[in-house]
Image 1 (cartoon, rainbow, N blue to C red):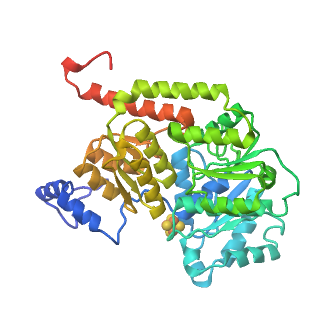
Image 2 (tube, helix red, strand yellow; image 1 turned 180 degrees about the vertical axis):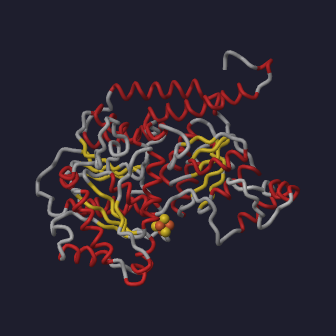
Length: 489
Ligand code: SF4
């Protein structure tokens, strides 16, 4: 064996070809699946990211906001590179760059120096601070540290510095998103509630959603209704700004004044009941107007429910243009059902997206045969089971809570399905099972432009259905014999 300089390298160990072949076959067996599912202390390829990554996404959704990671640089690079690779856009964020001395003596000095530099150099309108594992493990007190930073004038006393504790050994990216969004709203709305004032607007919260097409779709729906709105944590421009030759460090985001005034809104709609749970609980107790929490609108039934709720909240009928769009989606479902009906799927991802995949598939008469969440709860399991029980296509489908994509690999090789739905991390299992992977989740590292293709609403239903059915038709064309290679499909 030679290295890339052509020099001979002696391997530390050598595995005979026959042994490699034997193990490769063994990991596809029921016997191995049993051992894999008996695993308790090791996670392999989980379908979730850590809390601070979600906090960073929420911070990017506000005008002029610099996400600031209190913790180590490596974690910060991981969050930024994940967003870079998914959106293929820059994701500027600062770090207090804690190293060994910070771990021993506490990270206050790092935080103060970092805040002062970030404020002076990057001139943000707000700095949103959140933590990585290291300061959480040593017990850094963010409340005291930020108070001290203002006393030392590292940043002005009235400069908005929301902060959230986002320990990664607890929860995942959706919980970090929720915690950061809550802190941002609490900070910006303090003292802004005005007795008797109503902005007349809908506050819309999309939850942890890294599909910029979805944000544009929500806006299009509200504009069709003619309803004024404030989108809370709007990343649609931040991660989808036009290439015009000029770099902008803070493109887009919800205007801070609008976010502050959102406390006087006519109504607040939080989508994604799992990634907005804490924020919604606080909003219910503190915001004016009506408050509603609903699932992410995947498929027809969930989109119908959203439009009916918006109509009810604002006393406006569902616009004809959206009714026509619904009709087109139903027409496609009728045209396409023969290609997807009865097909089995393995689905994995965030709770809010999973609930969406499952209801969309059941609406099409497809079977979400393996359903996996790597950070799930009993409540989610019950909700998924209720969806399965309500449809004849949910029979014999199985839910796997707190399992990972190595478990999923065992499932799809021993109990085959026709396709997988999830994020790019599932591609290894999909390849081993020789089935397509539909990349609808987060992150998507290995395809271009998918974050711009909406999945929510009637248009999202059309997009998902077209992608899935056309792929199945491609497979038929690619694998059939000459006699069955037909012009019509
Ligand atoms: S799990 Fe902890 S150490 Fe790892 S990247 Fe996330 S914050 Fe950093």
